[in-house]
Length: 242
Image 1 (cartoon, rainbow, N blue to C red):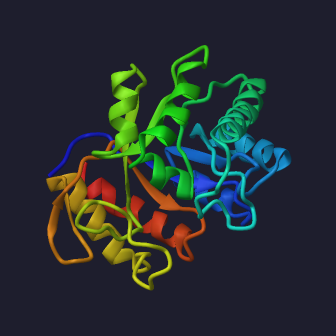
Image 2: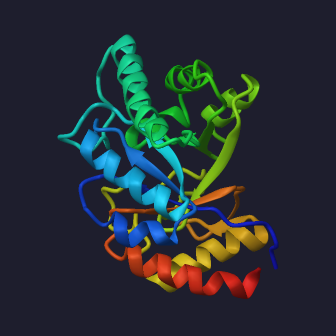
Image 3: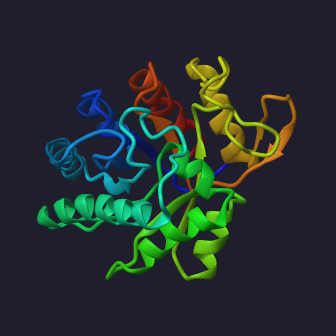
């Protein structure tokens, strides 16, 4: 049994135009910053929806790589990447503030998320950009990751994140999207994974082992083929465990 408040987040603004169906079921959202997907106009539309449903707003910066949807590590100078991430965060932050709201969090996307979880040089870029902001903004980052540890060391607030609809390896890395079992497509299986994380702080890895994990926020991907159905199902199950 668990009693803590559940925060469910979702990656949005990525060109699927399904936000009006997703956002009513979310607590927080991560908006693409026009680098791997999206545009200023899309960001504005999503923020309007988030404001209507009182959903916390986050920036979802990535490698500036629309061709690969930000899912491949780019060979790009660190200075260029830093400037790109700064501009991406500022774009979402500025539009958020025009709506008399504050940016709540930053969550890296795709390959940037994965490499910053392991490599300090990439983690530093993101953490440094959070530190320069004039008010505190959370970092959404994976449990036991380099970026989460670095952020905490530097005084950046962290919300640990886990995925409802992705399979994990024993080391808590995500199963590669190049593999057929990367995504959890069945809503019952996704709920089982969430329930295990909430009740026991554990999940079953793709290797079949129980692995310890902690999280404050739980993600469903907006490009998941059954995202809306999955969110509806989870919201129906959660009151039974409040």
